Length: 275
Length: 311
Image (cartoon, rainbow over all chains, first blue to last red):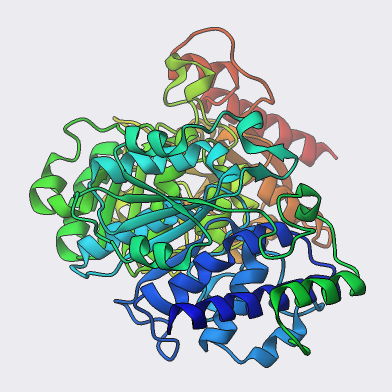
């Protein structure tokens, strides 16, 4: 896909996420919008995956370690062809599979780990990356973290083991939108300097505008990056990206958009019609 | 038991390329032979048990058979949520081995005691909870656990535990093993205290009471067929474990028993008190403190039996 096509797709997915949030009263809108471009870059360009063979042993693994971004992931997986888009109509319904967090891999194609409790996905991804080495395979593992998730000690436990084991096929992308549930991430637990922290833990670290599609593609394609180290990408993002009245407003961590707000958001995103 | 674990896992690791051993920075030299045979499948994950558990789950989801080994509190209570979400929720076939369980490390203080591990792990869906009675049951338990499609917790002792079997027994997860026949009372042991149950049976025999002893090496799933049998046949059935009376074998049996129609047997449970041990002491001291001795068990069983007969 061209850069322009990827951008349009990201806008379309944002619109769908907002509509779904409205329709099903599902929160975490801001968190979903901040990582949409990263998800699109991964699933529509950099990951070695085949939706027709979701359990291929040598596939790349992508783990949404920030499981509360599931509403975005569900849209991406459907559009990528892991399951019919029609399935999403059951979103949030009793007895359905689409909750606020990803289900287990055996319950939905394309899911690699059931996340939602923060600090689990990346360590599980490390186990998967070590498995590739043990089983002499060459797949990559990419984990998408939130900045709030970097509060969890288990992330740094995993970071140290990944560094000592020189797990060069593991990438952690931090969706650094500067917010967590109840406030500025820097104020709650001093995260900065975040890139330096990852470097100090033995990783290669790169900083990027997390909404700059060409730059995302360039960095996310660099795995292994030649350093012999695991790779961290600090993606500077905007919570609520793409909709002016949601951007950098942490109320949208939990707020549900009204019907009028959905219309206004779609207009800004340049998406028309029902998504 | 830890030496038997190291020996058996080395053999299993040599035979099965899916076996990966993860240690939480303990077992210095214990796993040298494993490392000789399968260096690429041994990981010292450091003093970082939460991550170790998640890593193991990730490996299991990729078709490997990770076996985690460290001191019991650190591989259970320390990383409970990782066990719950990453191993159990994903039904990932991770084998979690806790060494020095119960009061094995009595002298190290309550930070290293583990008298609640079975209680918390038993509550988790998909989890199997095992406490082998000796090194031979442990070896057999490892074989069974590797064939099991889901997480298995195995709590073991430290070293020098007496054998209760003449050789490696046929062991099936969830099926108790009769280690002594008897006709008057029945003692259900789990873990290292099954040997104490056998000692108690000998003391009872000297008093003319014939005691059957069962090794409940699996606490979950509970062998309810065996429970039905013994609670139907014996007026007194005692559970014996180096674990709190809350939530371990005694707790599990009590839960089961409460839902049965009235049966002949009455439950007597031996385990640790609902208390931390603030004074120092050896394992033997700690067992004495909590009444986990053959003498006390025999005495209590005699008293209970007499009360039942008098009633």
